[in-house]
Length: 238
Image (cartoon, rainbow, N blue to C red; front, top):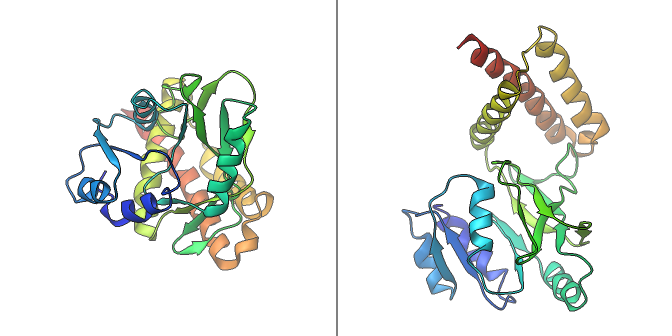
């Protein structure tokens, strides 16, 4: 929704595709006009959650295979070539693609943002997304996941403010899941979980590879681990 800034370049990166469909959730900016100018088809569907939106998109196409790309992502020529080669002799119904994430304008190779595999190439009618997972979609299918080698490019959070806004939504959702499961926060969660998250991001997931940038990202994710339990405690207080 409202992706006029990105949709043109996104569609340009998909010029190799047989058909390009923009599945829009009633944008109020020129997103749809730009898509039409680029020769893409546009369908509009009310947004409920990410899994529902992707499943609705799958149900709207007639092709045998679908490659999902968000507006702030780009398909590289090497990835396009690999997809075409893979579909000549596919061995499964879903393929995951690695992502190169740019956070705050910087390519990020550690702290959990690489290889960041995403299930994006689907055989229509043979796979879908788990409707229970409203964010961080999970593919549903029979068989084993296939993995492609070449990355798509993701122009992720452009600013710390944008990062905060999105992470607050994620922590609110994750806290609601814990609340529904009857999990209550313990005092040590507010200290130990953020420390564990920082250690995981900076050391285990090699955030140190990105220097000060990786240090900042690891610290931010540690803070959101704290924020998760803060929100969970607030839910239990009513």
